[in-house]
Figure 1 (cartoon, helix red, strand yellow):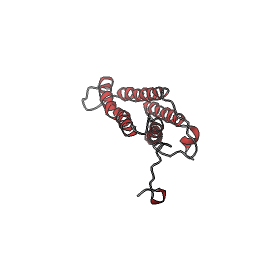
Figure 2 (cartoon, one colour):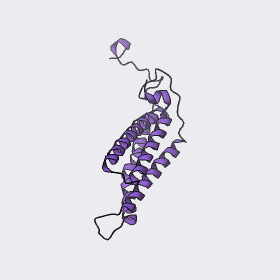
Figure 3 (cartoon, one colour):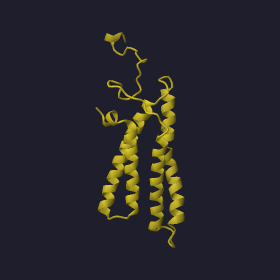
Figure 4 (tube, one colour):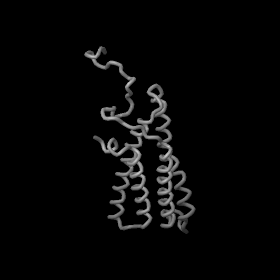
Length: 162
């Protein structure tokens, strides 16, 4: 069985948020390049868990199979809004807090502020998850969460399909 099926979706999303937040804080310590590479891999792992398990959670909590496409569309737009808004927030923060006499360089302080704001945003995402009710999953449920027991249309000739 999948780890998120055994432990639940929300605990893994919380863990991935904690890992990504810790990485952001680790970046603020300005470690050597070797440590930065390890932190980058850890962030990638945390983000990978977040994206996949968050998607599974979204599929689990769809209001109905009739509106699942529309609901997932809204989720998709809102889920990736941060990818658009993040740079719009980080740029001014870096410019304001990291300003130096040279226009094409920024001080470490600016990057620290940007990384700490990333940690705050990840913590905020985890806090918002508290409002999501995780549905209990039974063994044998569809892995995607999209198929419901009411969806019993035949799919093969043996079952009466085409």
